[in-house]
Image 1 (cartoon, rainbow, N blue to C red):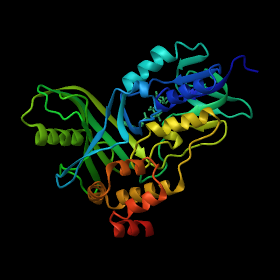
Image 2 (cartoon, rainbow, N blue to C red; image 1 turned 90 degrees about the vertical axis):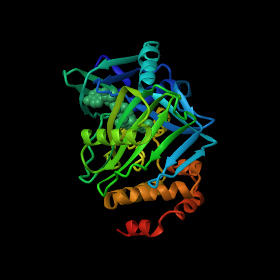
Image 3 (cartoon, helix red, strand yellow; image 1 turned 180 degrees about the vertical axis):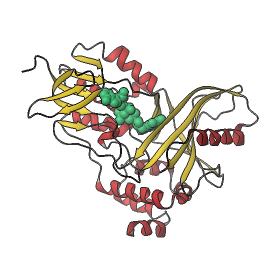
Image 4 (cartoon, rainbow, N blue to C red; image 1 turned 135 degrees about the vertical axis):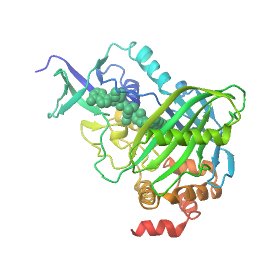
Length: 367
Ligand SMILES: Cc1cc2nc3c(=O)[nH]c(=O)nc-3n(C[C@H](O)[C@H](O)[C@H](O)COP(=O)(O)OP(=O)(O)OC[C@H]3O[C@@H](n4cnc5c(N)ncnc54)[C@H](O)[C@@H]3O)c2cc1C
């Protein structure tokens, strides 16, 4: 019999692992929690929308926007208030500093170990996690957030290539973030490209090239596109680059183990919205459910909508800017956000879907 048994072992101290840790402690402050992390973390900016009753780490939110901009492939700018929602930003720097410098050190029942978990051996009541250095840990439950490769060969990726920049002059409209700007004509049948802008102040912003594609990450191509975008919109303004943000997420198609006492969380637990890549609030909802021994469920109809949009991306990627243009020009932005967050009613969905290119959706429905 092992001498040390944890109530739960969490593999991965990233977004989902730490959110779960937080919610477990809220539910039962005394439980013994082990958290294993290999240190393969990258800097990210986590954004999400919530209403005024926000529950997703409001004390870590660094900036909120109450207005959102969409720029179409024709160059038309649609700026819209998103009341009652707000778009929130949490930097991974702040998130990790809170957990590693404050939350974990204050709780002696949490053990943080730096190691690479290689294998989980499932037992009846007790499971073991074996690390690369052969150390073994025992726990009654295991939550696993190690990234998993998609088993599907034709998976769509969302690639990010962004830079935090600072302009010499105050030229930015910090009141509105840009969710999607399709105005740079670089989308093709193989990739849909848009720009995402978070203006933190009148001078500082994250400007990110975002690409939906089945192709591998192409750093040089995305760098050229980013430069093109800056040249097109800010050619007369001087700026310096503060830091970079890069990354890739697979959209849909990741295997997940959601039931039992050994389960996946985070991206590998199916908590990423397949058609948009947003995961932060879904991981939080899942963490709250897991703390009560339950799990987050996505209603079937939202899975169906996601599948349909992914089908269009797979078969007619060049149609994506058009689909988005039509959506944002015909539907109020807060309604789109509720829909993308799986929070709209069936009646709202029907209203929203009726504004889209019906023949295109029916074609992919029948495919
Ligand atoms: C650049 C970028 C920007 C994003 N922006 C947003 C956003 O704005 N809003 C949003 O909702 N989502 C966003 N996402 C998607 C998603 O929220 C993030 O990818 C999120 O970090 C996923 O959380 P996770 O816990 O699944 O994985 P991670 O946060 O990557 O955590 C996994 C952890 O597991 C550890 N690990 C890996 N292998 C092992 C191992 N063998 N043993 C032990 N530990 C291991 C790693 O060190 C890491 O700490 C973004 C993703 C990227 C890539």
